[in-house]
Amino acid sequence: MAGHSKWSKVKRIKGALDAKRGMLFSKLSKEIIVAARAGGGNPEANHRLRAAIQSARAQSMPNENIERAIKKGTGESGAAALEELLYEGYAPGGVAVMVEAATDNKNRTAAELRSIFSKNGGSLAGPGSVAYLFHRKGQITLPVEACKEDRLFEIAVNAGADEIETDESHHLILTPPDRLAAVADALRGAGLTPDSQKLTFVNSTTVRPADSASARQALRLLEALEECDDVLHVHANLEIEDELLASHQPIS
Image 1 (cartoon, one colour):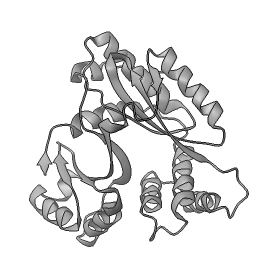
Image 2: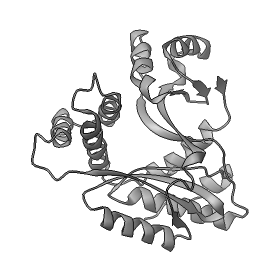
Image 3: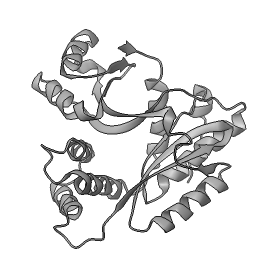
Image 4: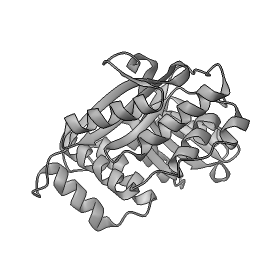
């Protein structure tokens, strides 16, 4: 259940990308909209919406923005409906990529993503090409100083968690998608406040490009995808040296 294998590396890669991620509130709003559209506007009955709201609040998104997004998702406002789409592809070095998007024009989004992949040495792929390498999971993070790992293990596993990993600054709890809210509630009931909770895709294997040029190009592709307005989340099974990641220069 517990381990230290992949979380630290994934967090550092995502941190490098998230630092340049634009229009954060817009992306958070879209996540709330598609969650409300798929499962209704009651967060108590819609675990995905509940997680999206928690993520938005963790980024200090105003409550009025959250409520407005929920109403858009349920159709209470006259906003254009967003369609949720999942794209698969390859980055340089054979790295598998999953892209979650929400759009009111799927032709525009597909064309833009195809262009981003092509310009950065990757390619879009057909449905099922890489999806089998990723699993849908709930993900919760908690500051490491908030709780000892043994106590966290007991609380989280009793509430339905699958896996716990720890690095120098955070605990990571992975759950089945439908147990995300229950595990987060159990933590809060024990006096522990998560600093994030969300649904995500977790890769089962990693790929390390054969050379540093391919690894850098893969990072640039992932960063460009994150910058796309229609993209909600980007997931990849990239494995990269710490030194190379530290020297990466984000797109300006």
